[in-house]
Image 1 (spheres, helix red, strand yellow):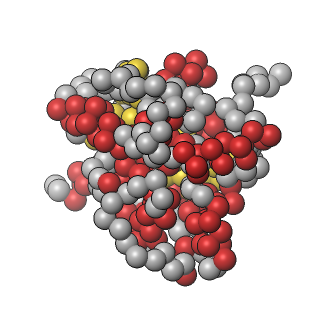
Image 2 (tube, rainbow, N blue to C red):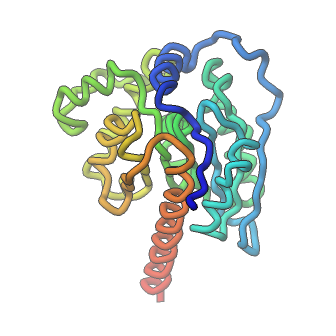
Length: 272
């Protein structure tokens, strides 16, 4: 009998969550109290002998590190790619509301990981955490080695509808480029960034994307998937739930690990 996991977001609640995020993302409102002095994190070690590779994992809107561990997220990743350590960061919605998610991710998680000796860092996030991953890349382009986007929230309907009406990301007029990301432009800037990836194979190869084809976010995610190489985009039957996420994360991270090993082998061969 198939083991059913609890859904992260039920279909009936998805619309409300999208509305809440579009209204509150990066807002200065203090809804859930003060932020802690340091982002809480949970480390799950991989099989590597030395601390070289790290996956930083950001939670969805209704999740945190404890929830992800309970659902078996690090186990699924390690079944696919056993070697890296996994750091689950408790960058919950309050960090987005206060406009602190990118700064705290960089200062409290990424920079200390570099100082600890991790030479290869991958940033991954599900749903809201997928948007956080993209926001970090916009603010710190190329700082991490790659992005793994898990059914990412892709922003307000105004932006995604305008892309769809333009016939896709390649033909979309994104407007003026801003140097500062705020609550009113974060999603447009993220899509601008993705548009700039088009035609740049090095940037496109750094992005891995998965989403269920019954997910309410799928129409928006699909527009991002259309610009990625076929081996970087993983649509599959499923919705916005752990039933879809867990098995497909295993697949995606296995492919990522294999791709990385192939690249290292090619570099080693060419250097001889």
